Image 1 (cartoon, rainbow, N blue to C red):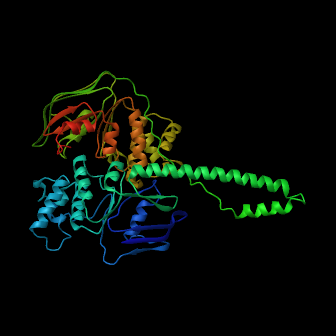
Image 2: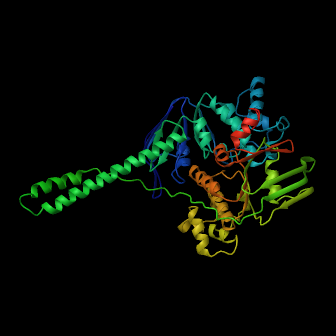
Image 3: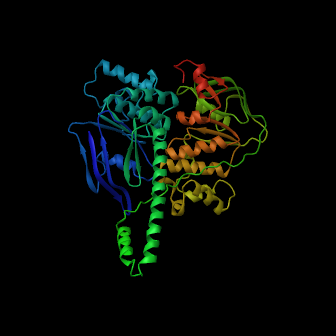
Length: 495
């Protein structure tokens, strides 16, 4: 369907691609991975003919259709209703297509009562879901998806995952969710060191194979360096002696013609380490007889809930069940209508909001925003920023020009500069890349405080949760085990 032939692409002095090749065929399901700044989004834009190669060519089979979902701000008509917008790119949709549209919208978390809502009444995340529904209903030959799960909750993500498994076209996606990649994709395309390499397997296969490739290359490099040293030593010892000068000259020529093995640059990786938190009492947070409503909508009535020291708890449940509200109540960032919220002994709560980018001052620089947390020296703050890949001149960038991933990393820096012992996180992996998610998982596994979180990333949930709370119709049910335990105790339809 699409052939990428010897493509070169640079921006200024930075070379992104240097002789890249790739073949995308019907039925292929690729995940594009690579470090931040490697050029993943630029490569996607070239496949969409929004950017052009400096050299080489990208060939498209005649008549193929390509559909694209960006990370943010997908164009939608704000004047149409949710249902009409999902059908807007189809010619003369009949009743059967409309029924499909309703099923897709419900799979993505919409209620029947939402179908006639104007798109301009929705939040940005819900508008993205409308754009996703419209794209799925178009059924292009190639679906190109840039972080498609960012605006989904766990339940709608699982539906979307199943939908893609049955999708008849090809799929090319960028995602921070390794579990999602493992299930949906058949191969991984690695964009690294200015080239593209296909690994014919899931993400776990890619990680294993890449490590083995690296080990083989390093071994070959070491052996070649020893060979070069021996040859140089021979030349130096024998070039001045008449009896061996010709042999030395011959070895020197071989040395000059030798194709040197080069080790690729090591990618800078995120380093996250939560400081040792102050020990709390056994009970860290308690809610007693809590009522909470938004206008006429009752979210909780007579809610009782306790959180104990050392628990790593995932909140799960359908969209709109009240997961984020429960997290906000525990964090003390929304008022309750009735009842009590009681923190335990020595409890210090840290809240990592789903809308954390909105809490940053867009006019400040990265350094100024990090310095605003508490009384830290500039050296301490710069060291923390460096661990999160804000180095050199990048600390003087204005917050307003940062990417979503950079804003998430800056929010994490602020959290670590004022470390809590009870950490509440709402969709913490959104806008982070795969390496950053891995670093965050590792840090949270070592975190000795208490953790409560909401996440659509099943890898993240499975790696961390030792307790699961199912939020359903204003009730909360505690399952004292990991996510697999929760699934084993509930019906297959529950998520």
